[in-house]
Length: 256
Image (cartoon, rainbow, N blue to C red; front, side):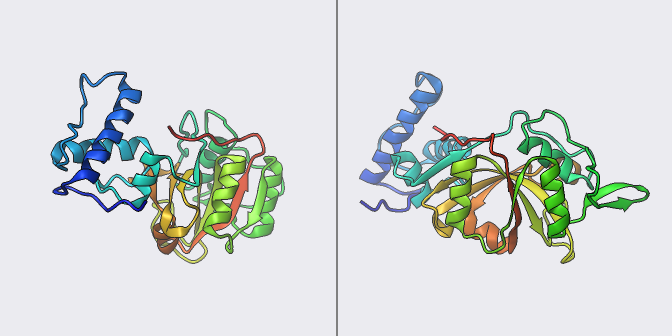
């Protein structure tokens, strides 16, 4: 059964069903309705909107307060994929030029930036100090080998293939080409390493939400946790999967 898009101002039986599902989630989360309750009156008012946003934030969905197909699927448990492998702790990059140190640590489940400079791997120099790692495939393969990571040259990877990798191996490390450490468009030779920590939905570009951890966020003012549809992120970052790395020891689990 296809559920309608619901948002602030919507009314009717579908809204009441939504409110009942939200109340079931609140009970699982809080153990009671002492502090949060979504009166099942069929009226999508400000309280319902705020609880929808809380649900979306907790479930790594786009926090827009609008209940579309992806939020309905999560609430009803009809998703094809719900796979997450969240780093604990989040590891920040030591400086704007070494995103690789934070991203590598999160991929390897290490608590502090991994600033190891493996022999034979080419790093850029910034004012005499170590900067970014050269993003040529051969060099990044050496970087991956030194850290016992598997690497794909993955520009042709589809959304479904990417989600299957997360589902099978847990979090991934992505080298996004053409962007700088602010996650903004840079020169064609720029690249930025981030961690893809989860995905949920149907495995198709418009029906899948993915979550990225950006290790350089605290240095650049960009988003630390980025959650959006695969389609949106692929349009914004055409070379989202210039290279994909994974670690056999990581495993995904669903967000409930």
